[in-house]
Length: 284
Ligand SMILES: [Zn+2]
Image 1 (cartoon, rainbow, N blue to C red):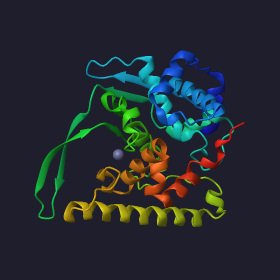
Image 2 (image 1 turned 135 degrees about the horizontal axis):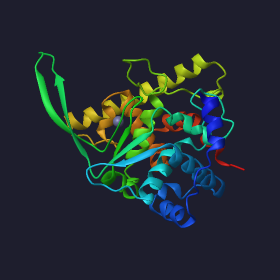
Image 3 (image 1 turned 30 degrees about the horizontal axis):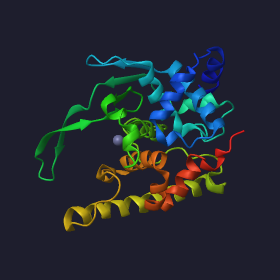
């Protein structure tokens, strides 16, 4: 599969993103301003392949413009910049990093948040119905949905650590290697030699323990704020839903406000630095 997609990528030459469009895209996304020239070139190259491989559909009367598609591509590809492939090994060509997102093609763009009907069964067996406003949604092997109204605020919302595109694509990374019926757990495939650990089991245990402790501390902070009026934690309390949401919400903040993220989650700063290979930022 990987060999085939790599070969296919060599045959299909993507259309270049025009200079002016690339510059205006970066200008609206301040968290990409810190990239070096070499990183920006690599990101643009990833975006061109991303745009070739994905199909955007506007729903409810929305027309998806080139600027919208390039903006989403840039945000979706930012986490990939220095990564390993989804099998944990280094990739031969940078475009093969898109294998992380190869379980789907369609990206459905909605003009705004989508109201989804939900139901929960409580301890007494009573089913409660409610609606939830979704800014994005991703499912294993299926298309990804994004609300343009939310994506368009990426620049302003970076200070509060929000980014709906990175959130949904982090879920996609977390959903790889799932068996039918399994749910993502905030435990994506780690790179070879993760944080200098040659033993895969040791690496997985370190990931699990560090994530578990940070998640428990976050849930505690949310509950202290809800029950005793303590100051609310920096990130959305939606991150306290389950380990998969905690992973997705903290990935957003890691990429769009690294400074504050490091103060709030020092252990995750090191952990994500190993996963996303942050130390490889000096690209040739
Ligand atoms: Zn989510």
